Amino acid sequence: MKSALILALLGCVALPASAATLNGQAAYGDWRSDGPGVVRHITPADIPDRGASPIGVAPPSLAPRPAGAEIKTLPGFTVSAFATKLEGPRLLRLAPNGDIFVSEGETGKVLVLRAPDGAATAAQVETFAEGLDRPFGIAFYPLGPNPRWVYVANTNSVIRYPYRNGDLKPRGPAETIVAQLTVSKSDHWTRDIVFSPDGRRMFVSVGSSSNVAENMPKKTPDETHAWQAGHALGAAWDKEVGRADVMVGDPDGKNMHVYAAGIRNCVGMAIHPVTHDLWCSTNERDLLGDDLPPDYVTRVHEGGFYGWPWYYIGDHQDYRHANERPDLADKITVPDVLIQPHSAPLQMTFYNARGPAAFPAEYRGDAFVALHGSWNRGKRTGYKVVRVMLKNGVPTGEYEDFMTGFVIDGRSVWGRPVGVAAAHDGALLVADDGGDVIWRVAYAPH
Image (cartoon, rainbow, N blue to C red; front, side):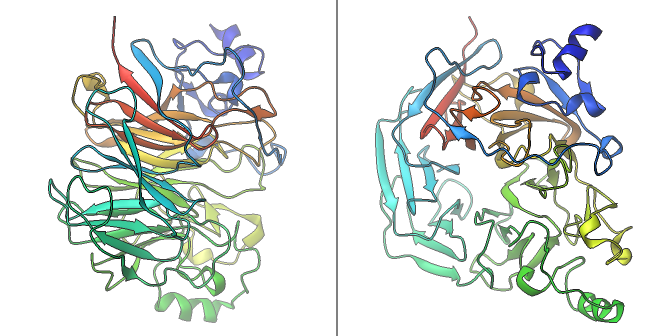
């Protein structure tokens, strides 16, 4: 077993599904050590020094699915195409009646897919809304079986449409809830939106406008102190005002303010169904090296500061902002689950489904996360769906490869997971904007 592990880390063989948990540097690896059942556990103590790994830039070449290429998952699970010929499907959200809402950021559309419970393919695909500004997040309000609104997070606004269960078109024109989320419009454009379980708070995630605030003007200690006195802990300034954070406000868009800061790009959000914790799946910064820093999935604490741009994964200082904010070094919230660097986690969802295609009971309460895949890493990572393990609602720090097989070689891929959602019948739906497909993963042991 020890020799097999060493060979796998060198890229010579793939780890078998029965391999033990990979810890420390062994957990980094790349796509060649991926495989359903492989478990990784990276901790802050495992983070290498800057310069220990090369700075790689290797954008993937998106290729047609090769003959014989198969999506891989665990025994007992089956994968099939639920919907095809879409145009860059992104986030997936389930309506109370079972309809699947899909955002297409590049086309500016929100689609509705309808299928009877247990159906292997979508029977109907309709355009719910179009002409939007790079829509991503979708949410239904109020929570429960009879929502009256569908909320959509555009790249710089939040709107809502009047809605009743089963509607395939809005009942009226869009109402603008938040007219402007940010002053700057560059870089990370996805915005997710979720509501607190009591329905009183609306959360909106907003990514940074740059990699690491490279051009943000410096402040003197006195200027920094004055700035901090009137803003959320660790809030950045200039073009980064209102960026790299999670916002919170009323469901009508009033009283919007920073809930937590220093989260470089919280692409996906989810509320744990039991603990009611707010979670983020986060893309960390680039150009520090293939193995720096890890991306992460974490609980988000109100008033918390997660490091960006001055620090990463605790008090690891970014040399590009050396000694600028020593006052923050002991105030950083360390993320819960560290993901292989540059894997690009996008949407996440907590699995709590039941039905004929439902997963075994031990999956309930755990999270599934779509890893869109690396572009700024010499050795490719991501391009898979992983399961984040929790125990009584608390993350263990481990995650397991659940759905792999989209990478062709070190240069090319044929699929890129983006969205994840559990259907009414318990199947897991996975949006793939590389293949323009939504995959359906069902549990059907023989």
